[in-house]
Length: 195
Image 1 (cartoon, one colour):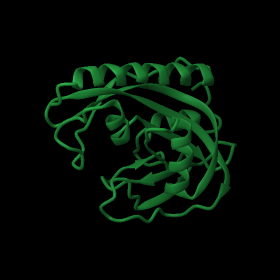
Image 2: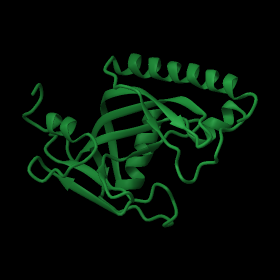
Image 3: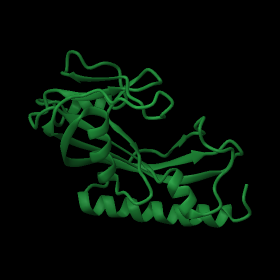
Image 4: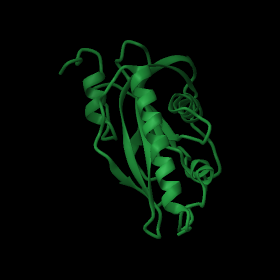
């Protein structure tokens, strides 16, 4: 672990606080989720970088979006990830991106769809773990949106890319598979608001 890591960790945590406060203010929501641990990922170095910029270049947060195929919220679009699970499109927030920019880009890359965001479902923090035991607190954002353009596609990337997607699907209430955010999606599907 770098000698500067405690100071870097503290500065990244302060940035995380600012990002989350800004999200909650812009989207007028206070809903949060419990913090959780994430990592280490197989392609990350054993220990953390020696600067805030180095950390933000590696991982600046995670953002995803529950995408409905239309604004009627009858069918949701999910992607099948390499670990064998269905999930809403999303990915790593890059150094100079907002969570909103990330989900627009990831939804387009992973599904072929252009989306409009309608709400911030929740935000929170996660503790990113390195193999040497170091960790850093980063922001998490889960949005809701719907398709406004584009056509469904399957993302085609190098097989060694960590975000490669093997399938894209559109699911209604009856066909919704086990997936991350399943209960949230069922609640959001038309006719279930407030359930």
